[in-house]
Amino acid sequence: MLDLYNKKYSMDILKENIYAVSLIDILKTQIIDVKFAVNYILNIKYQLHEDDNITAPMVIKYQPHITYLDLQKSLLDYESDEDFTIDFESVSNLPLKKIELNISPIYEKG
Image (cartoon, rainbow, N blue to C red; front, top):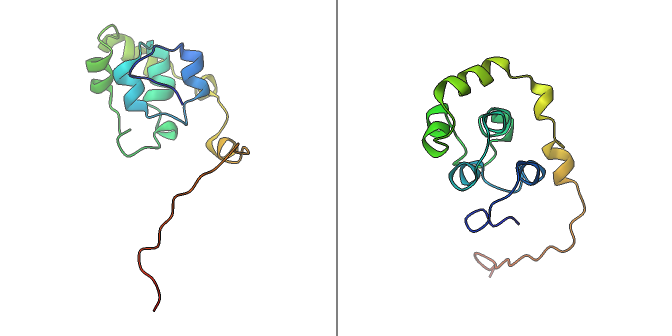
C-alpha cells in the first residue's frame, strides 16, 4: 500500500494504484498535474470511497498550482480514452497473496 502522507509518488505510480488509495488522500498529499486531476481525481468512475466526492473547487484548494482556467480548459478537452487504466473488476479479481480475516461472532446460537 502506498504511504501517501509520508512519501511522494509519480503520477504513473498513483495511476497504477488508483483503486487501492483514496482520491482525497492523493489530492491532499501528492503533487498532481491538471490532466491527472481531470482524468482521475474528478472522474466519478474512480471515486470509490465515501470521501471521494471531489469537486473542482477542492482540486484548486489542495493543488494551488492548478488554476481555475487550466482546470476548466482541461475539463473541456477531456477525452475518456486518456484515463484508461485496468478496470476495477479486473483489479478485484486478481489473486491475492494472503487474506487474513478476523471474524468473531456477534452472537452465539443457544
